[in-house]
Image 1 (tube, one colour):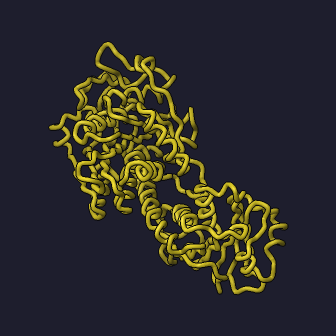
Image 2: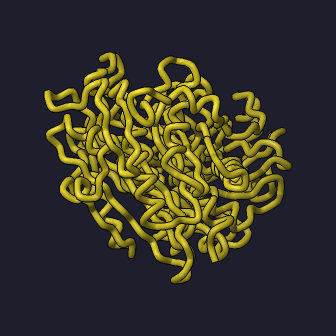
Image 3: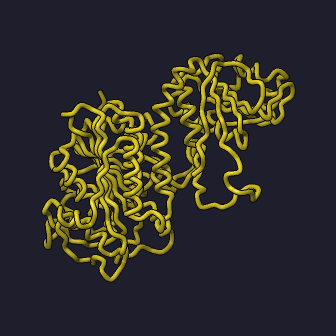
Length: 499
């Protein structure tokens, strides 16, 4: 966790000093504002030497450029001007942050082929800067580069020059609130499990009260009284008690039904008695990424004062192979009254979510429910790290989620549901079992399980096992945790459920 860079906006004017970043479209033709920052005309020579063509997110730089007092001048490729969409501006911002390196005073000249970036475009560059600048170094006592103490240097100051600085500042206020929500989610996922247990995670959710979110923490006694038998069965093997955090943002009309988001928060998943292989088990500290995304989303909605009513519910447990842990073959009773035969204790997330979905449906009567969970390795096999699997019982909600994913770059691929898959989780011994009994269609049978706890409420299950952590590095994220889901769901709300 690093200090955030500061971002300001100004009219186009050649800066006097510091580091300068200009933009070049595919083909490398510099605009007037960029040429004004290069009076000696060294950039075309640098382009030729580095074979720089202006492709999106490509970079080239010159140190102590001739004819200026700049420390460096860097060029970020803007790609084809006809394709300068939201994702392109974010990537430009990310690569601008990367190009700034150790610079402390950086000016980004947001002009492409003679056209100044709009206020919205400049704000997106700012968001890209914010997201790319994130690192998780909380537990480092020394800097990597020179061995100096952490905190010796101040974060960079970026000034983005554009056509309408006032509009950019206004747009960035909302975008940065969402960005901070995504970074909060990254922080939570990156934390080690010995630091962030169910109690500590619930305390992090409680901090949202400072933004006006109403937060209620349900403790183990409360959960027993309510009857969350499936969630409690997962938690019983750990000495760390479970928690459920219920977060409510009331920014809409008093009688408006809320939109609801539910997150799986298994703070560490050993697999329980059905223990996982040891290789890579350290990554199971990230099995709470769904809950992290919900907390980040609620932060975003509150910080930007979204005109909607929203509820976020997260189930926080640890899945351990203690002598008191649930066993394969156990039958547990969920909050809904439906019974579940536990075939594999490593299929625990769906037990947690089943109780949460039923609780949300009954207590909050939402317009829809979206749950996020690092639920199955099967979705990773199907889709890799680039799209999350979406299972949905409502076509309109699915279309809106897909559009939001395409707009933000947090993409979704709709996966099937159907009665033929439902049969795979039937069992003679209870109302259902918690696995499909084989490797085939594992992500789908998990979704079919969850569907039994939503009744007629419009609902989507997002399996983010491939996108929430350990995803390939990108222009806007170099961290192990991605914060996936925050920007996606904020866009869903902003586009369809406000006002």
